[in-house]
Length: 314
Ligand code: SF4
Ligand code: SF4
Image (cartoon, rainbow, N blue to C red):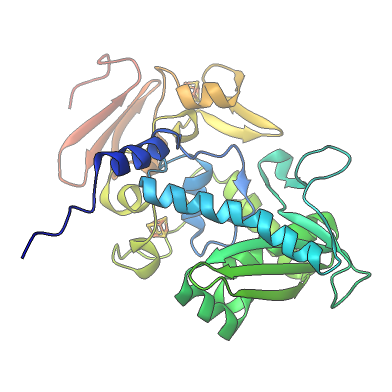
């Protein structure tokens, strides 16, 4: 019997590599409304503090793009029912955006719609999502709130900050192209709770509690921050992981240099960078103006020395 051809070819590898080359670090300037419903508050803090750069395979990046492209078709489908669907704010020509916490929290709406057949006179916040078959089945069985609490939270934030009282969740199954459409009612108390959660994360100088101390816990196994959070891996070296930086109204400030930091400067960091101590898996032995010495979990000593070897040796 002849051997099956290899599933990978140089062309296929080059296509995926092109996606990977374009992916950037995935760091977002603000804490996204799409994330605030995550089960673990510590993961949100890591997101906001740019602890783990995103690293996806080309195939997954292409899948994300497929989900994004589906939005155009869902808008067309909704318009075909007679609804008015606005993807951009006519006043700005850009996506409808919401923000809070001095711009540190926010998100962009997929669309808003009027003339939805179930309630034609009511504006709806519209959210489009694509699902794998298993996820889609669960969505139909349980509804958005129980099956996709993160999506439900995202829509609550959008409704809370726009004042729109209804949401329209449009989901498509990637395998069968079946649609699921569900109307969601604004829950002001939940909106307030989610805003308070975002504020807590943004204002925290230290990582919040873990959802579990067990590295094998369900949520932890699928968390991109698992290596830093549970295994002692090094966080990304940017101003956001530095103990001298903190968010202020409409930006970030460095207390070491007494200046504001734009996104470019935050990514670059500087030679005076010192990690927020709770990001290091160890205990502080001693600290000076520009260094912190740690006893790591394996018993060794490590000096986070911004002055490059001027600190005492271990
Ligand atoms: S690894 Fe677990 S505890 Fe740590 S941030 Fe992720 S979900 Fe939270
Ligand atoms: S000391 Fe350097 S790395 Fe730290 S916040 Fe200031 S500019 Fe950023």
